[in-house]
Amino acid sequence: MNFIDLEAQQQKIRKKIEARFSSILDRGSYIMGPEVFELEERLADYCEVKHVISCSSGTDALLIPLMAWGIGPGDAVFTTPFTYVATAEVISLLGATPVFVDVYDSTFNIDCEKLKIAIERTIINGKLTPKAIIPVDLFGVPARYRLISEIAKKYGLKIIEDAAQSFGASIRNKKACTFGDVAATSFYPAKPLGCYGDGGAIFTNDDNLAAQCKAIRIHGTSSDKYNSELIGLNGRLDNMQAAVLLEKLTIFDEELEMRNNVNHFYRKFLNNAQYIPEEYSSAHAIFSITLGSNKKRELLLDRLNLNSIPNVVYYKYPIHLMKGFNYLGYANGDFPVSEKLSQTIVSLPMHPYLSEQNIDLIVATIKNNE
Image 1 (cartoon, rainbow, N blue to C red):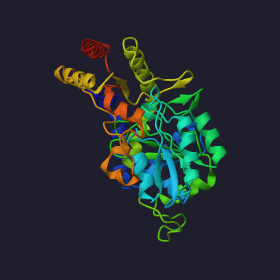
Image 2: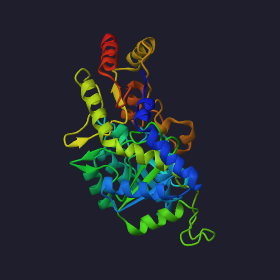
Image 3: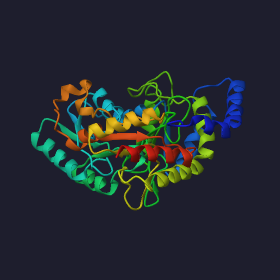
């Protein structure tokens, strides 16, 4: 049994990928070639958004819009501590300050009431200027963008949708990667739509922002590659990764439905999984359950390992308690929901090719732990 089964997927599309690779090798062009621009067009059509800017990773997809907005020292960017470290990392890299907000214990996404409190507290404190919000669509479930948008409008803040795990998800049939001012996704191999290396993309309807992001990803250049107009970075997606994504996109909706079926099968027997609100659909990037205590989780992890069932703890450490973020001055107890989740959550195998027989084994192992 695999936690994520890329081999089964590859069997369906390998010949087409090899044909695309052969074309790239014959042409001898490996960076920013036709595959990249074709992919950007296909992604824009899929999400019904004006501009898609591919880039070298999901981390760069978050970083580049922040750079375009000139966010830096003295600025506050609000996000959650219960996510992958990249979300907060990009804020710190620019010299801005991540201001953490706890999450709901149901969806694991940013708590909108606590977000308002954090913004007000930051304004009253006066040391930082609130500039942006980075909600995270954790494990594939979109955050509450209607409320987040109202909050952002009230305080004049930008929104970056961290859709690293939610490409393919939706709220009331509006697709993820279209919420806020800009969205960022990741094509890391383990994602629902993943390449065979690193990759990412930026989504926006803002013409000016799109032009700036395109320039920043190539060292801040636009018309002349040897004349940087902005401070940028090397954030390009290569042709090989674009070729993989183009072929994976042809089976993406089919695989998304298969993931949904796996999710439904799990939920027939498990009532402690991440909550998906009505009229929301998840990309089912990760299937996670919570146990009543850390002790119960450790017992379950032992039992899963004994039965050779793959498992991962996402996320074992909330960001505010990581050593690298000690400088922010947070302490244990500051974000109790995030801290409890880090102690009680466990993620189970989730991919389109997971058999009912394997799900039965996983469920039986969990039930025996109760």
